[in-house]
Length: 309
Image 1 (cartoon, rainbow, N blue to C red):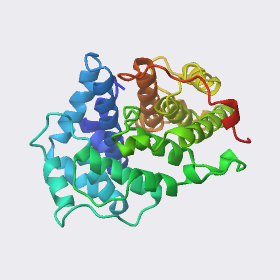
Image 2 (image 1 turned 120 degrees about the horizontal axis):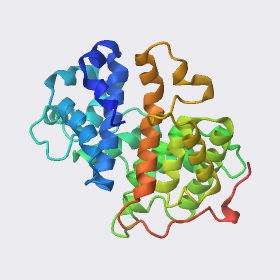
Image 3 (image 1 turned 180 degrees about the vertical axis):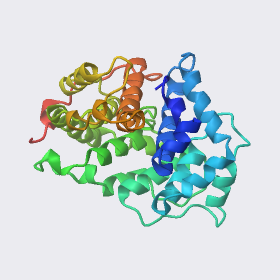
């Protein structure tokens, strides 16, 4: 990520990458930068990632690209405002956030529970006034909460499950606090339920050789208080990712059937490898450095909580 993320804001990257995938990739890079700064702020490698993000977030020319694809424009603008680098107080993102709330506090939109949960997360991160539903309501309406004990795990969508976990736990940084109801959604039986589904999904993606999804699930295990280095599925997932990692650090695609090293051009290689590499970087960075006060992690869900496969 350090070696190649700068391509996203280079003249060749701006010329050769389609605008909407480039915007999405930069929002993901900002998320990595934010987590990296929270986990290991003194790591010298952070400066290269943060430098690219800061340069983009100060560029007024980036803002119109957020609306390039109308169906993503609102969510991209919200994420852009929320993920502004710490200390950047006068960038274009302030105008974007002001425009989002020009009609008053953010109101619920016509979205799935999964999409609404993401909106609530970024609205809170941006410090926006809103009338959005609670995290608990949105979780209980979602597919993870409603997945029955006898239902096949393949009925679940990995991205839906992992992003639900990421947003409810603030990527592993939200610790349970009796004074904060939002922090208590994934506790007790709900926590055991989520752990069971995430571990079973990890087993399935490792078995299928799905590198991108396995990286997300390894991170989700950490966010749920598990230690992926010590769970069977997490350790298997990390071994698989280590085995396929290219010498330069990249995870070469989403799966063996979609390998980046078969791409005809450097740009295509970058596009195929970027997301899997970023997800794995975020997962391993988080797992290896942990979080403040993150001791006492569990190895596996209790056997009684393990549902049918």
